[in-house]
Length: 219
Image (cartoon, one colour):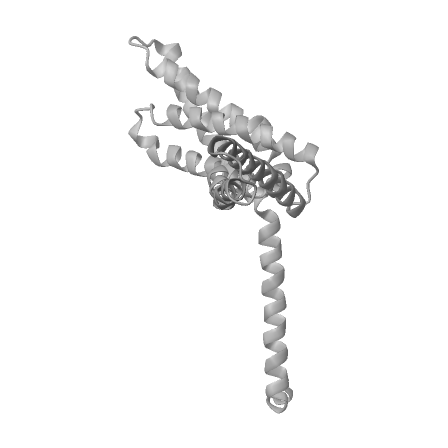
């Protein structure tokens, strides 16, 4: 999805001058009174915002080779995922276990990274479906369960065992989230490896063309 704030700034940058120009045209060449001119100027600015918003959305969708239906579907899931990540953020920083601070920071970093990349390039959503429809839900629910149990004033053996098991499962899920991130960027890694191979081939070819006699002697 496009950055809403940046999109608004761009639209305003265009709409404000159009609003002023519309007001001046209504006042001087057309000869309308002050308030009707203000009304038409505001209407012109609003219409400019709407038209630019539709154009920018269409351009963004076409750029990422998505249909409007796909984009609405992905956008809806990304909004829901953002709310879950906010809950996860709250859960992770409520846990008082100092030994797991690094792990919790890694979990939050990975989830935010996947969401940010998918927001910027919505087509990546299809590479992260397991993350959005399964793994994110699991880690949110487990951290909430852990917080609830650990906040109880009195704990028995069974609760202590549940806390240990929950910590172990969260640890396993953190590794699953790492695999989700790798899967999201797997195409980039393949592309990079291909470009490296092409670059190496080009370098070797240039070396062969510069030192043909030396290469034949080495062979």
